[in-house]
Image (cartoon, rainbow, N blue to C red; front, top):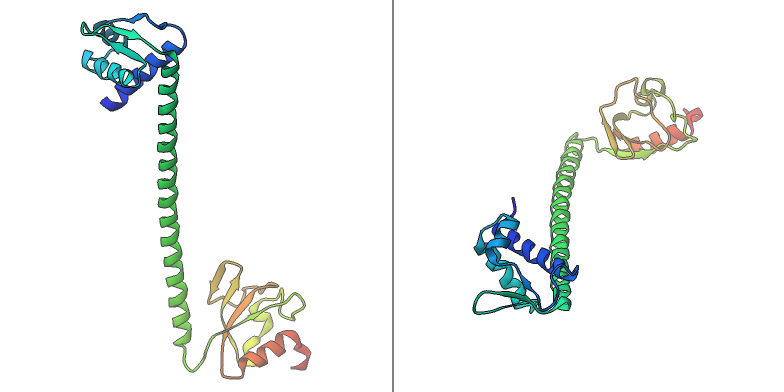
Length: 208
């Protein structure tokens, strides 16, 4: 439901449009408040407020006897343009508020995701004395396209795969059937020499 302010402003805009359309010509009188109140199905007081808006903008004049006379079609046009501009600004403000609210929601989700990543990294670091490292699997790698069970990485290098990072997805504790794809990044833990041994293995399997 429209507020009282919106109702009398809408009536004023409608009367201004009717003046522009020639329904109420310049120097002619508009129907009295009671007739207009009946036409718009509102109280005479609402009509009085609507007429007051038009009077302030010199669209109409109101005599001592409360007669309403049209005095300017040009001012009626300016009155409508003024409120169109105001509505446009209000609409832009609403759009900005919506975008800011969406940004706050995205920022909150991003913050939670970063906290999860930090917590996960902390858990990996707590696997002392083993420090987690990431290795990218190239298309020509021996392990590309193979399952963890087929690769037998731990038997050859002493490295344990604790996660696979695939684009934005993180597969934690992948099972033996998990397949390693080209461009995956495998997260491994092991002793101080595990990184070098693992890189050599996945790129030069025949040397083992």
